[in-house]
Length: 130
Figure (tube, rainbow, N blue to C red):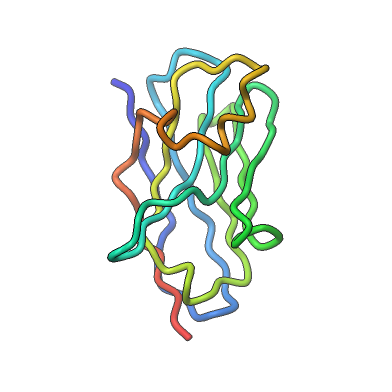
């Protein structure tokens, strides 16, 4: 069974930090996109950070550059999102997602095409208070 399970969300004050984890199981290919996305109430889902598992290329939304770091632990089949200097506007439901297999030449699509992602986790809530 293919699934993604997020954990690590919570409530913090502005300036604080959280680390989200996404445990992946059942994925049989080695080169694909994984990413973190978020959706605040009344807003569209947006990309936060993505990574190409075939080589580690990473992509970030401008709003989180320098504050968030995406990483992967292949041995544990786990994706992480380290979030520092959190702001109230980071408050949202955060989702982990994965795509189907992606060739290396197309890895830039990881950060550009949300429609590439066809497997989604259930989400974990992040709330940042001022």
